[in-house]
Image 1 (cartoon, rainbow over the protein chains, first blue to last red):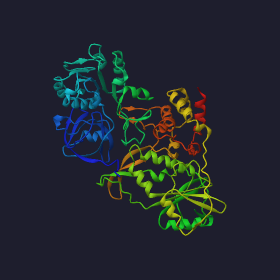
Image 2: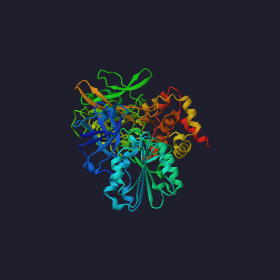
Image 3: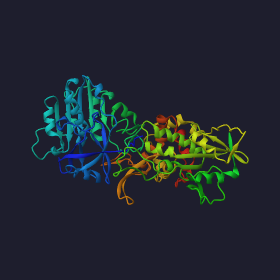
Image 4: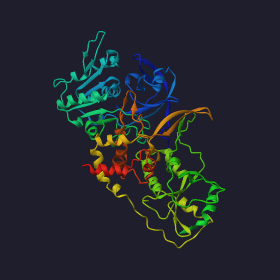
Length: 267
Length: 315
């Protein structure tokens, strides 16, 4: 029987610093099969293990990418990885966005801060399977322009999707919107008709974005959120990621808002 | 059927000790704890006792190495000698059969299952109680001057080939079914817990509870854990270890920048929710075998059954 905690080693291909605290690390590694929204457990021996959202964009030859925010011992180590350094990886875990059920639907995506990762994975999937979906909208909010990641890729997305970016404040020149992401949601911009909403960001964003979406006629079952919890095992045993009667690592991290409402402390 | 004379227990254990590492409950002050069998022992406890820590400490050991940077093996290798746990009471055997379910599905925990295969469980008692799925390899059921040997598995049966067992015409006693009346009302408990989320009730419990997590450590059906990277001096390698923890501890639900259950009442609620709501949904039984350890060792003298009674009565 396989040890569920056995990790594969992966070599760093490149490490791009996005801001003073955030880096996008590309590995010479790929998951043969994963769905957007799934996560992996990445570890560096001696520094611990943590969950990261999986991105494998076509522009990087489908190689694995993780976005890391330098906030602790492990993330500091990952932030400072150099080419050819080795890390350990196990996964993919959990359930991603149910893209197979979204055929011919309009998709509206809402990302906040570093919550852009699963949304970026979803955008990558949609860009490769564009004809399966109808209208695509991307809403992305962050504190300042430097925290809007993947700006170049998002510009390219404008070919097949409406992209709306917003920042809370900007000192430098900023051509896009200023203000909260909720300001971008109006009955004109987001309509509930055959539309699916996919959200990832801080819990506070969920509260207000969902409120707006509901006002615009969205049903709970058509709103999908990706939940964050402390995850250790990835196999539904260690109890850290429990949310009501669900395990975020097994049943999630992507849940429909219908399911979230059944959890006592989902959002 | 075969039986074992009470006077033959000690020589039987000595013969087992030659082949296996034998552990059994040993008196520690007023309490009991599992300890290595002392082959020079002259008296041995033949009654079922409640050890401080349940047998889970052998199946889910604290500090278990789950991966090592030296190891390139995908398979978990158990190089330990086979263990015999002697003198397990019915509560713990019942818990064991439930823990087996937990560790087998939906995703099996290979480390647990391999250890499970490596350990032979010998239960003891005046009769078997609440043992629905066996769980034991051999159960020694007490009669006047002997124990009737009831085998639960082929390897338990093989143990009775030992020369100290003799043929018996005794019949196994009926398996007793007993449950505290409060725990029989599992549907009511479930409903009351679900309804009480965020209520003052849990804040009041938190005023007495220290949040120390002892109840989780001593519970035969609490199995949560933390991973921790450590350096091993013996072979100078890094390894990842599984550490016991408790969902009562403040950082159990902490992530970078947020604690999902920051306050003690939420964490207390989660413990009750797990045992009496999530557990039944996942495995069809409550996560409690009523062994009483959490009541016995709670420094704040909280009795979870009293808590449940009060909760149910508050409608």
